[in-house]
Image 1: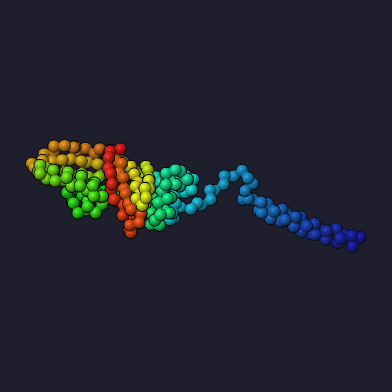
Image 2: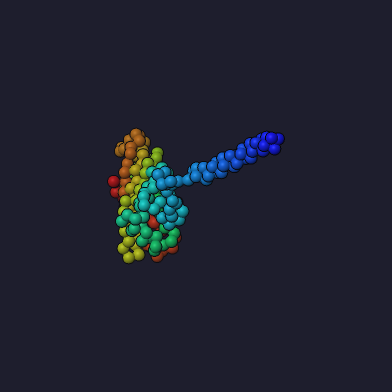
Length: 224
């Protein structure tokens, strides 16, 4: 009788250990399953290569650069033409190009207002510089001054791109808030307004792809 009692008492911890082992096994199995995708969760998009150098261009969609700088989809017709320029000159990158021409836009507008011929000559093609220089000369002859303030550039986007031989041309649309005012010799306004006006400009930048350096110059300008 004593032996049976000891056997019955001894069976309890053994069963408990067995149950505990089963419970641990089940917990480990659940933990191995939890967190795994089963096919219905939203998949994170894989990283995509940039247009040329690491930047904000993502394969298959136009991704805006901060402050309104959209870059064309590399797979679009316009993106393919830009890729042709990339293949012809390794230093061309659309996001960087937009940064460069925005800087040029500010410099040209400011230089024209100030009559800064040296700056204009470095940023314009010969025929465009002749037009700008003629307007400055006429303004000086009339003893007028021009005041321009760029308050903000709302957007800068590539509208078109072409390659003819070694010559590349890219049209950029600028939308900006500006104050433009022409003053006579007495300082009285003869044209323009002190109010901020939103302007849209289409500027064509040209470059010889065989020429060293950035080399993008303003080849045409018109209102958008």
